[in-house]
Amino acid sequence: MDDVDLNDVTYMDDADLSDVTFMDDVDLSDVSYMDEVDLSDVSYMDYVDLNDVTNMDDVDLSHVNFMDDVDLSDVSYMDDVDLSDVSYMDGVDLSDVTYMKDVDLSDVTFMDDVDLSDVSYMDDVDLSDVSYMDGVDLSDVTYMDDVDLSVVSYMDDVDLSDVTYMDDVDLSNETYVEDVDLSDVTYMDDVDLSDVPYMDEVYLIAIEVTRLRITSAMSFASMKLIL
Image 1 (cartoon, rainbow, N blue to C red):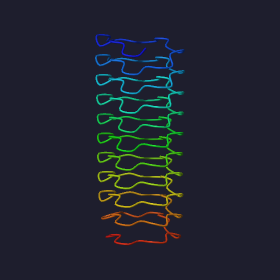
Image 2: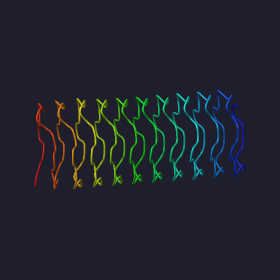
Image 3: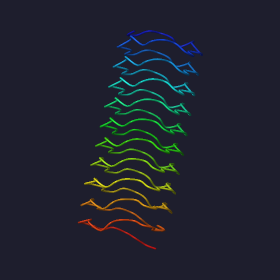
Image 4: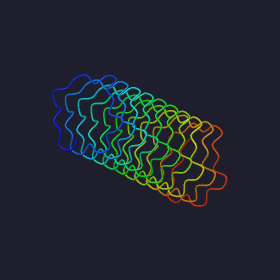
């Protein structure tokens, strides 16, 4: 479906695209509803314009591997979206996503420069295999309950400055958390940072610490913990 112009399509409910494998440069810029669209065999979606999509509930993207430069900037709901086999999401614009409950991103390894700046809810989001999150903007995230980041190894310059709740967040295998801004976090109950060896320039100002495990952390250069 290379270079297909679908820019006046507004509804794609229950569309079966299950055997489509390539959707490079497809213009879906005016699609607003994609409920239950089967894209389960799509493997490439580079440069797909979805910038007016607002609802992607139950969209099956389970075999998508590449989503580089996909514009999802107006998507507001992504509940139960299966992205479990996505491995690359570099430069993906999700800046207006507000709800990402139960989104499966368990095999995503690269999320460099992903814009999630307006995400407010990330409950039960599985990011357990993410290894790189350099420059990821999560500055307006307020809830990250039960988010699995247990295999994240790099989180350089990640902006979590407005996160208020991080209950049960697993960061137990972090190796680098340089320049991570957690300055407005108020609750970090049961956050596991026990294996983090480097926490350079981490800002934990005004944290209300409850059951925060930092017993095995090796380096706290320039760390600010002001209670």
